Amino acid sequence: MRALILGIGDAFAARYFGASALIEGPGGYVLLDCPDLIHRALRAATTAAGWSVDTAGIDDVIITHLHGDHCNGLESFGFSRLFLRRRHPSSPLPRLYANEPSLSRLWERLAPAMDGAATTSPPRKLEDFFHAHPLDPDAATTVAGLSVRCRFTKHPIPTTALLISDGSATLGWSSDTPHDAGLIDWLSAADVIVHESNVGPAHTPIDALNGLPDDLRTKIRLIHLPDEFDPSVTDMRMLREGEVVEVAKRRSDVAT
Image (cartoon, rainbow, N blue to C red; front, side, top):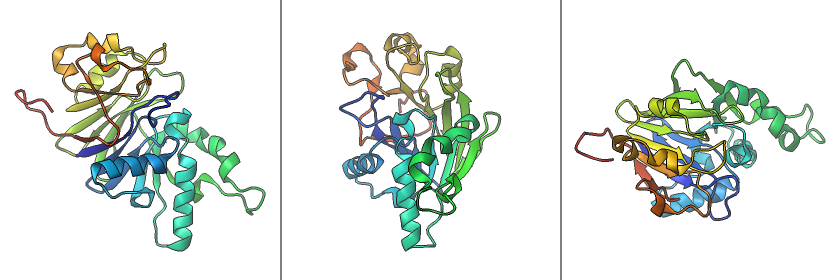
């Protein structure tokens, strides 16, 4: 399993795209979060990595929560696929996965820009853009041939961390979260953990991650970082936009 990092920034980043990734699964590509300027973020990262993927080739999207730096790009993603289906009617409707509280309010967020109420009769609905599927915290969901499990974090709005497995190796994705020992323990089952680090009570300070045991820190890669983040304050590596993370089963004598 491979994950192409599209963005490493937070909601206020001026240097980076919002934290997001493109995961290559057995059944296709999965977009993990959909920040602003998603088309530009995809183009920049895929060009850097030598991949050839744009929104036309992504049929599965996972949204961790409804803060704009994680979902604002859904508008342009959804319209791009709507226009693609007009040109190519056989193009599938993309599938969208999120926790149930987020799904229940998603169209409320998107409708003013997407329902076309002034010119479209009847007005468009979420179902005109995406097949919506809730992520169940009590059961795994299959997405593009990958097994996806979720757990709610303690962020101010409903937010899910993820464990994504191809049956051999597992990627952990903290999403936005304050420091949470229970969540760290849940993520520890992963072979590679992509964990946020930022300031404020809604996020995880780097000092909290620095205090984790060595075997956990060697698995952690940092994301959702402020522009001024200083990588010298930790031995955990910050990710780079356009970087491909190879997720492989770890052995005790090999660091991934």
